[in-house]
View 1 (spheres, helix red, strand yellow):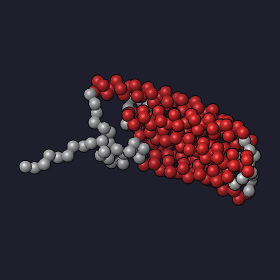
View 2 (cartoon, one colour; view 1 turned 60 degrees about the vertical axis):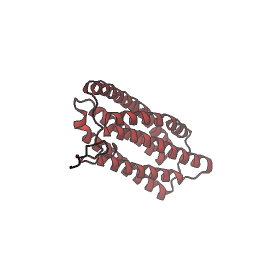
View 3 (spheres, one colour; view 1 turned 90 degrees about the vertical axis):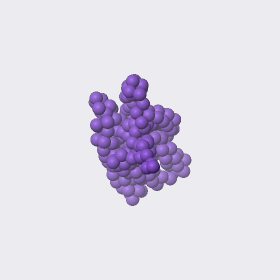
View 4 (cartoon, one colour; view 1 turned 180 degrees about the horizontal axis):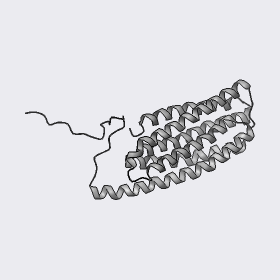
Length: 227
């Protein structure tokens, strides 16, 4: 007696490297739940854009005033997060979001790479010029606030994206989570400069931001967020 062929499960992989979605539930239930999740994605995207616009303005202004490459890099990352959120918003504005997913992921990846290039150039320039940035209380407060806000927002994005089976929504959640990590690194760098005068901590933090951005850009480009 021949064994029955194995059935596909949610651990199978698609041709593009992403995990295949879980078996589709009953059509009526799936349709209603999907509508709820799509609305939730749009609300989370709106919240992400709003917060990051405010964050970018504050960070770039304070970073320019203090000549802080790390703070400016953090502000630019906020701009990239806005671009990423707009990519997801564009995807879910259409009737068939899945058809736009790969393009949305490419847009997110390119934004990461652009951030990494700019921050790396500025960090290297500042390091070899031995340009000591001024301390920034505004930057310290901003980094601390982001450490509280970003994890909650990222978790909500990730849960919704995974349930919906959207790689781009999960990618955007990783973009938001990246902001959490960068907030902690930025806070450490700003405090070291303010308390001990360790000016070199600023370009080092900026380079750390660039390295993480490259990693996340590669992940988005390959479409691996859904796995």
